[in-house]
Image: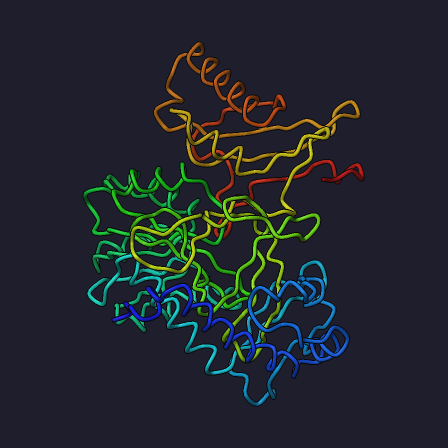
Length: 435
């Protein structure tokens, strides 16, 4: 059982005292890592006595993790490390996070806590439709589900017919899946003559690893007749298990016994009040192998003010609105990809797959949006299709402030990614101009 009443409903004052104790221990551990040893000798930690003092320390960024590759952030002897996770490193050195045995156990417990909070139990059959390996998502949920005691099927991503076979044969009740693949998999179910709402046993899904809107979540729930829970994590912290939705589905509880959260203004780094959107900054409070201080996630969200009806006292963050470095600038207008998705998912007749392309035309930026229609929409008359195209264009123009080129496509026309969906392609780079 992973309902820890003492921790999850701890009085705020007691939770803050716990954070103080764990922050002091984290600073001590961090000073053993070469990078932080140099940094803390320069800046000092004498004035950092409680969470509110953390702003006196500088931020840690992905650039520093890359520059200090491979061992600059390692705070324990290499003999204490039992696993590492790494980014792809396609643009330079990868970011590497080292885990001790204690870190792995703490991570398993956090993910089990998340899954239990959402309603999963040891009696569930859990199908993990996420990648395994250096990507933390698959392994994090796998070990969390096993810790919870659920039968776990480590099927991994892709091969939709095989996914459906396992679901039918073993009566899968819970799944971990990319939001974009959840909709694509439902299409395959229907192509096999089955109804995902009635012919399968799935009752809940954990979705994450790529930003998605509330509209997309509701489409997943309606298509599968399930409850879909939003999760948040990043490999620099531990992977999944940083924050998770409770049954209220009104924000994700960030586990403040393990992470110290700040929301800052992306350009200045200044703190923003609860309720206002900014960049999430996290400090680890329990990790031993690679403790991180004030790590800039680049993820945009806000602290949701007020208590949660579920009774848990850990504060909630809103769903991730995008990344500060994902913002598109179209002729001086700032647009986030999720604005496009949110708009599209509200329009009847529009499918779930889309692609945003940015071109340079006559020395001006031009936004192109290709979107698949729902299967039955493509059978409409020319007049109906033109009307749908006009509604999409008008809705996008009203939301973004720019007039895009809209192309409606038959369902299944866009490439189907096995992993995270590629939603934005900047064609301006070909002419030396980018975002």
